[in-house]
Structure formats: structure tokens, C-alpha cells
Image (cartoon, rainbow, N blue to C red; front, side, top):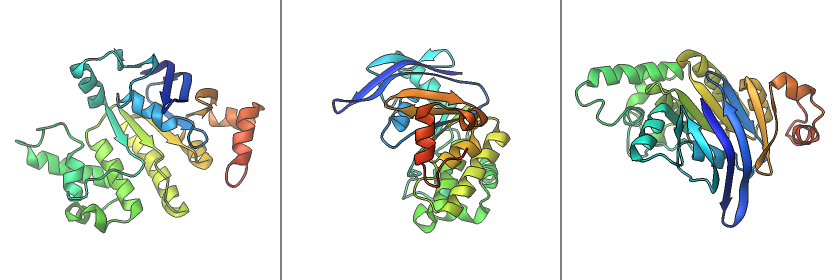
Length: 248
């Protein structure tokens, strides 16, 4: 379980998170939606210890991330896979090399055949053919790069998978494919998933539960059905302003 308790953060003197309280439940897919610049990605980076909070706490399976020593942070990060907004593949590596970076350091030194099997299995989960293993990222489309990034996230069978704006920059067809892929992967690898997005359709398609983050705090949370039916003015304003209008 991940617990976020009274989380505050300023960046460049500007308040970004203003006291976020949130529990991420075991096995769920949680979507965090909200306007751009409201702190959604900053919240994710606190969970893996890339940012230290100004106040508050983040607890991952009983470990306080801000208070953890090097070994504690390493233990937290062994449980978490992170899919970055721009895929963050290593340009000089093949797809195979990028996938194997999702495994623990040194894991493949004496078990290369097992690692190759894991890479092929991860590719199958994201509907890519074995032939792409020898390609470099520049030879892949944007949608394929995003799928490789997801495969790298799941190859190590982490307990938590964090997705930072996974459909940003993709055309509607590829965005739909990525959403379906995330839903498929969440079922297949039995991971707890957190999906940060400003895309309302993605949030309502993927999530068991949705959180609306705005002005640095949680304005509302609930199931997709609950948020569709709510008269909460912050939710209605965000949904009605989304491209295509309200999903109600």
C-alpha cells in the first residue's frame, strides 16, 4: 500500500502541492487527473524519492520514503516501475538492452537465457514482435516507443507501476491502443497502477478510482461512476472544460 500524508512541495518559490492526502489501495488502478501544471507528475516523483517533500510523508509498504536511507530507497524502488512521459528509452541501446534495464543490476550476468525469455514475454504483453529486439529507439514510432517503455516497466514484475501522462503526444488511435494496453497489463501482471493524466477519457477508461488534483490538493475522488454523477463544482468544471466536453 502507498500512503501520501499531508504532502507539501514548492518549486521555484511557487506552491505545487499544498497538503495532499491519498491512499493507493492494493491491486487497484488509480487515475490522478487534473489540469496541466497542477502537480500530478511532481506527486509521482515523490513516491519514488526523486523529490523530497517540504512537509508531509510518503509511505510505501511501511517505508517512509523521505526518511529512508540508501538501502530503504533501494528497497522502495525495487517494488516500483516508472513509465516516463517521453518514454525515456536509451538511444544508444537496442530494444533488448532497454528492456533488460528493467531487471535488477547484475541479474542477467549468469542467466542470459532467462533474461531473453523475460524480454520476449514482456514484448508479448505489449503486442510487439520479437524482431523489434534488435532495433534502436530511433527506428520505432512514438507509439512503439511507449509500448517498449511499458514492457521495460513490467519485465521485472514490480508491485507498483507508475505511468506519467502515458498518452501525451500520441495521436488518438495510438492513445487508445496505449490505454487498452495499460488495462491489459494491469490485469496480466497483477500490479497496482497509478496513472497520471490530464486526459479525461483515459482516466475514465482505465481507473477503478479517480482522483482530481487541482491547485495542489485533492478536490475529489471516487469511482468513475461516482465522478460522472457528482455535482462537485470542481469536478464539473474540469470535465466540462475537457476536450470533447463532459463524459457524464
